[in-house]
Each structure stands twice: as structure tokens, then as C-alpha cells.
Length: 323
Image 1 (cartoon, rainbow, N blue to C red):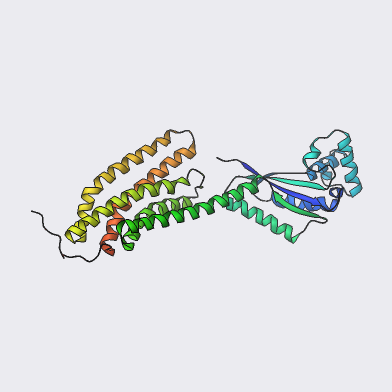
Image 2: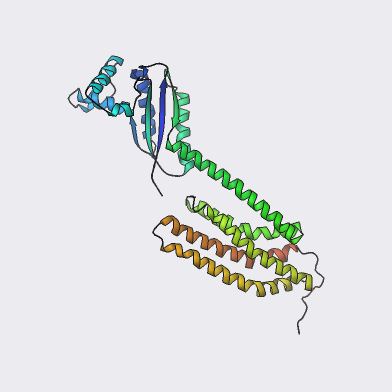
């Protein structure tokens, strides 16, 4: 979902009628010009635009006079004349006592990091060039959206961190071994890290739908990993050989894990029929995540078991023969 954001710079003067000062308006004009040089800003609005249009109109529509009036007195006369003529747009830019005025920026809805960088650049400019006889504050839907995006990102990081920690603790308790629990967590994290990393690599934005990828994937991956690890551990206790326990585990548990993963993956691909791009992309990404989780359980988990020996020391050098 694309769209536009607005950023509003509020000039709060020290006293009424101060907005009619050319010094404040010149500062606002400079800030507006700097903002317009950003590729993210599509349009700007301020009382400066109105005064430029009036000044040009009073000079025979000469483009050379599309600029601020030369004196505070002329600015005040133009504004008074505009009010008397019934101009209603003035109240969109200034307060009734001319102590407050605004500069509105229309900004593209892009990565929050880019919007944050734009705000930082304009804030640095204001700090280096303070407005005369006025304080400038930044507000608007854009600021609200930016703060909300930062809050969601931080809460997701904290939430996923706690979820992974609790799942690891539960796995350690379930298998009665810290080593087994931590080894079992690796295949659970692998598909999530891989898919989210791929999203970042190709520049795909995280939205409120795609943020659910990790939540759904971790539940599916943990279920398969627990089944695989439990069977391998059970077979190792029986035979005491890692290669044999991995082989039997894959033969017995691998098949139902593959079938359930295929069913789940195909089920989420139903979202491809949606006219909403966000739903279609969510279905594809979640299906890919399920496939990656399956590959992690079939390839990565057995490799970890064979290399790390989480179940203890082997009792036999070669797997027992079955008659």
C-alpha cells in the first residue's frame, strides 16, 4: 500500500503579528526551498506561496515578481487585502493572530529510514539556522507514522527475541539437555533468518502482513524439528549410533514431515488468487519459508546431529545389522 505522508513545520512566533515579519517568512522560504530539493518531497505548501502569487498579481503577472514582498509593511497590506477580499485559504497557513504559521511537506511513503533521514537533515538545518523570533516544531502524520514504524520494529525484535528464548528453554526442558535444545533451535531459526535476510537483500519492505512470517514459520518449524529430533534421539538411545539413528529418523519421520509441509505450502499459495499484492506476496513468502524449514529439518538438522553429537557418546562404531 503506497501513498503520501505529510510533515508539518510549525513556526511559533514570540508575539502576535510576528508572522508578517519578512525575516520569519524569508527563513520559512529557505527551509521550503531546501525541502523541495529532496527527491522524497513531492509538494510544499506555505503562506510564502500565497504572498508570492499576490505580489506577482500586483505587478502585472510579471514572473520576475514571483517573490516575497520587499518590506514588512507591504506584506501586512497584502495579507489585509487578501482577507478583505474573502480569501479563505489564509487560515490554512496562519493563525488568526498571525503568531503561528506552518510549512507542509507532502512526502512519498517510502522506507522509514529514508523519511527519518530527511527529517534529520531538515532538523540539522534548523539547528544551524534558527528562525528569528520564533521556535520551529515538527509534527504531522509523517512523524506519527515514523514513530509507529520504529515502535513496531522495536517491539517485533523484542517479541521475537523473547519467543526464541522461551522456545529454546522449552526444548531444553523437553529433551532434558541444553545441548540438544540449542541444536534443535538452529533449524528453527535458519528459514526465518534466510527469508527475512532475502527480503532485505532485494529491498522488499516489511509491512504489517510480512511481519507475521516469522511468527507463523517458527510454529511450523518447531513442530517438525521436535518430531525429527525426538525420533533421532529415541533411535540413538536404542542403537547408540548416530548414522543409524539419523537414517531411521529420516525414513520414519521424514515422510510425514514432507507431506505436511507440501500441504501447508500449497495451502498458503491460495493467496496468489488475491487481487491484493500484499496478500499474494505473503502467500509466496510463507510457502518459501515452509519449504526452507523442511530443508533445514531434512538436511541441516541431521548434519548438526552427526557433527555435534548432542545425544552423547556412541556405543558402537558401526551401525547394527538388521536381519
